[in-house]
Length: 506
Image (cartoon, rainbow, N blue to C red; front, side, top):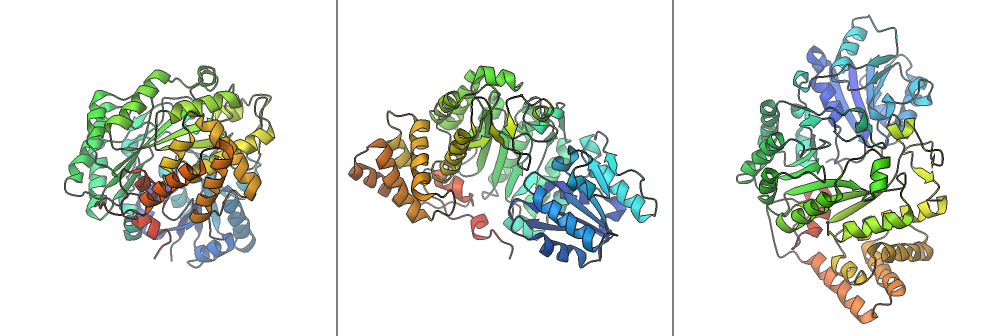
């Protein structure tokens, strides 16, 4: 029986909770009296609660994120109906900034505001000693990363074999983007590099292979980032099946980092580059300082001189941006040929500067994920079209399955306008945004692109055949278990990823 149970609903099985593992690692003498129970979004709250209560816990701590808000609220409601004596502690970025009278917050016995690594353990100690705090909201103090026990040892054998291993080497972000919670944490603080690398060493020795860094600006400090890149490059010589993901500032790429990034083999490295917008007036409106020329130069250099998989981001509906200017930005980014362009709808996350100072003409959904409904430049129907565009682009453009076909479709045409026309056709034809089997999607792509572009049907069909042959060609092998989508963007297909095969626990 564990007196303390830490739990959350993860976005999917392969994405474990880094935050809960920090809490476990920093419980000190209470560590042996605690356990971790994670679920994904497919788990019904009543089923999750049954599992949680089997050990008769005294404290349940829930990590709340924007994607699990509704499930956590349902779970908390059930808990307080059937076991009101079990103390519920809520924490995480989603719950930190909700008002005191919010329905989810009212269900909590305690709420931790901010980073909870140290305060959660102290709270549990006080509760179990019979001296619980009198106030519900507990404000976490600023934490020196050097004072935190690292969570690497909290990843178990199942995590190592079937999940991405989330790690962080720094906290904070120098950007003050109004839509981002990191705007509240402008001071970048780095974890001491020696113990951090020792933790990575232990994970690799135990079989860890897929690492996702959650640092908001990994490439900000050249010496710190260089040491981490050197670590992985050294290990790739003896452990070639490593895959590493970093998030980077788009307009900052020192020569020392270029040299290291260029040394990674194909299939081993993914870089997430948040561009968000190319429009100067928009960047000013959201308080984002970005040199667009350097963004283009860096992305072009990364595409030409490295074998990294490039995942880029754009946001629809930012203050000051029109549909036409967003379309121009998409085409500008597409011309740089990143492997993926993730198109997201602007969200008003609680606690962000945008939530505190929302423009008068902006209307957002009041329920998570708090997406923009309309503003002066994007009416509701236009945003619905753009949201479908984003979904279909993810299925077609980002999937890596139809590279030759899209190249043909965009010849002498605007990529955005062309794909938006296809998106409108696809929705009018099917009424669906999900559940497209690949053979049917291929047929729809042939029919839809033919309808909106007028490309010769024989030429379009032959190009789709090229893409289909590429999908099924497994001639080239590698030791690197590249995730499926990244695999499809490689020059030659690689074997299926173990993550694709094992999306559910054994």
